[in-house]
Image 1: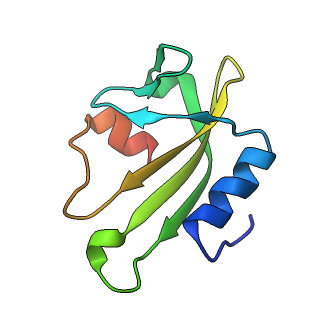
Image 2 (image 1 turned 60 degrees about the horizontal axis):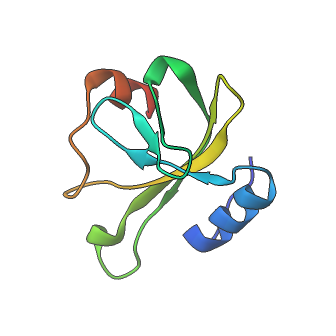
Length: 97
């Protein structure tokens, strides 16, 4: 797995590799607004995880996930972590570890 220096570099590279959809984190699923679908934890796998820490503040921390659904939908999820991390279900938390 490649190490990236910046979040934007990682997003560009993963999009070029076919992770073209954007996912949003919901309490019990991932949402793909452009396809108007929700994907439950049992219906996707995390192919890659990349962590980025802000240079000036820990509030700038984020995690980038490269995700593939059982139906072949591939996309990315960018999630803040730390103080601003979303409240999610235990199934989602385990899946995104």
